Length: 131
Image (tube, rainbow, N blue to C red; front, top):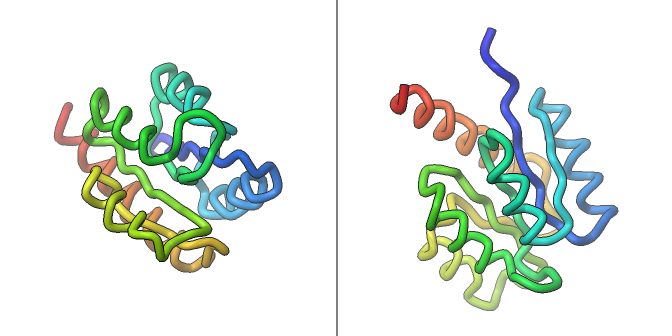
């Protein structure tokens, strides 16, 4: 049996953060929580994270800035970006910056599950390749 994969949720809305934890843990994945980008970077640097799901709009550093920072030091880490303002060109910008996917809020559980499965598979393959 392999190790339990870990997903970091970066969302400043406590209620949404908690509901994402519930959904992710139902998939048999451990969910870690951060409420801003700086906290997220600290968690990523101190843990083996298999995927990140981040909101765009947060206090301080935005989700897109977080994405760029993650890609600077951990290129292979899959990042999924979500936003309540999907029609503003954010999806295109996020994908250009290296996001695996983009989800519009309110989050569709099935869509999140599907893209998260892909992210975790990518992460698993990257780990196998690096061994």
